[in-house]
Image (cartoon, rainbow, N blue to C red):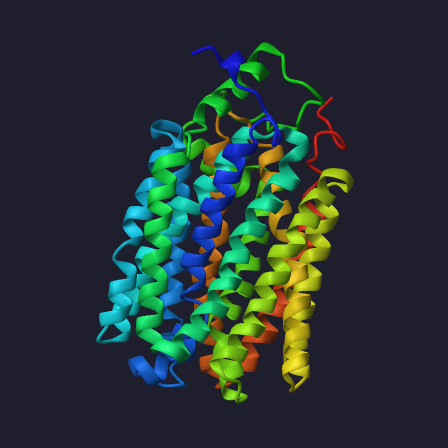
Length: 430
């Protein structure tokens, strides 16, 4: 294959880039349908006692560990079988989820449905992100990740609001069933018809680096890794052998504590304060809309000022937003604190991924992104376990909020100390 035929950049690949954005929007809708109604109705529909914090968090623990593992697997498999095949597999696995929610006789069924959701998200979201990075230029990575996460989390927020209203109109189970089936079937059809495999673009970029023909400054690729590394070699590099990758991976893991909190404790906490499902959907939706919408700006911002400062300040702003939730008692206050939390996430979220992509060689970029996403989404599971334990020991939901707030401040400090600027223009290897 003549790799010189492949051109890079958002504009020149606009059609395929837009198709990938559509896919990640549908991925976000699939995730979002589980994030408002299911936790709020755990007791009413599935018999989960309010004080059973560990049981309540069980489905998020399952989601985190499964999605994290599948991120790792997806990245590696996509370098062998192509990005599109992995994307399609992820969508087919999602098909049983809506019927399982409709007919679930117990909370165990919800946990198993969430396992399938974790597999779906690990395969599909990883591929939409990796595919767009294959198509774009290095100086566009912040914008690329920002657009990807904007589209995905806009879908998450929109689904939370729509399913809240559908549940009040059709009932919780029927509303989730019809919403989920429509989204998944549309995703399968559009992916099969219009998505192209972008692995050839990654191979073309690797060939350019090998020939010394790449444009622009040289990224600060790690030197202590072979040209075509084994899975274990890449895993250890991203996890601990390179302190920059270690700092970014631990930040990704800890920031998912926030998402686990928003997913389960937020709806339960707001429900205890007397909010309706529709209003809970709006508060959680504001977090998602601000997070998603702001990434259009914060991702592009890092292409100009670098990745490090937005990541660190984002961790601290997000942690502050979580703490603010407990300091007020009105719908407007909770909406404000959700917006602060969402803006902090927007600062850090696309830019950690962009930083990983900056210093990951195209030969193993898919694996590097998958391993980072493994650690990041493992944060769902670890965070849910720790949140459940903290709330069980104290008997208070508020303990979980303070735990997450402190963890975000400490993690941001570690990034500031251990990482460095990764943008190749601002901190080139030469």
